[in-house]
Length: 122
Image 1 (tube, rainbow, N blue to C red):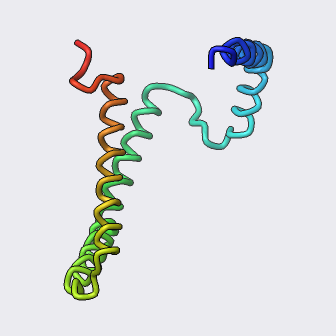
Image 2: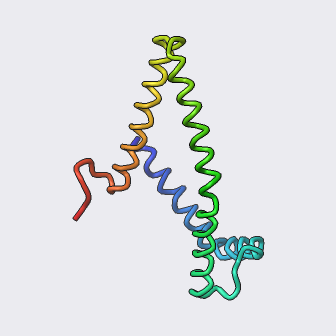
């Protein structure tokens, strides 16, 4: 592993030099390519208008999300009603999936805290 460190450093220096050399060109190309998505002039007022539009769009999507939630819940109820078909293998898969979801949640919490398990840096 220690022998790979100089190689990694060399690659990082090369990538940094490439970015320093071509980064401005890439930025200009990206801005030109996505010109249709840019609000002119880029002012704070326009950003506030866009934020309000996003908020209102999210509010407008609540009814469809509400319906989708109840459809999913009805599907879950049907699965629970048919627990006679549930065998040990299926129960194990469901339990393993739940543990995996919890592990990813916990990992996100640790990463969000900056890598500490016990709490946030103060």
